[in-house]
Length: 219
Image 1 (cartoon, rainbow, N blue to C red):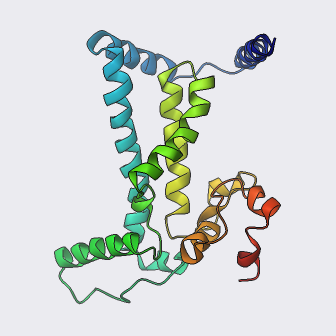
Image 2: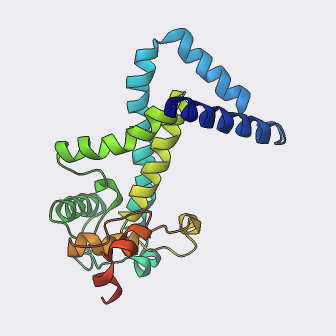
């Protein structure tokens, strides 16, 4: 009975999506994406698309989304939005190649020693922690997803969120802040600084319900 109810709910959801889609204008990107998908099916196996394709999508999205935060480090104007001060106040006395190298070393040091976050270290974790977190990430996809494209879209959305909260910058007019109960970099940075509290990076109502944001509120 429970299984039938779940199937009926899913069928109703699909019908609702199709009904809404019938009122929307035609997507100009639909045909190019369809052609690209057919090209992949003609030239690669489904296993290759699901594994190597997913890896490529992840890496491309990961580094592209990290790139703005990396560039901000070299723009003096953006420093006023930086949550924590850098380890060194200035590296301008160094030649440009050495300056970039030392910046990268500082980013790595901060990532390893739990100092001010940087977007590229958002996925820095023990393999066991990655597996445990990955289970929560994939459960919804396994239950509700019926196409690998939806998995890729979810990967990109999740990367966008985790890189933003680890960016180290609290930028005004951030469109992600339009999401209800979105934590943002300022809220999540306190978790890295304090270790206890502010566990939610998106749905902050959990911290409010369990009182784990009390130290942040009084900070």
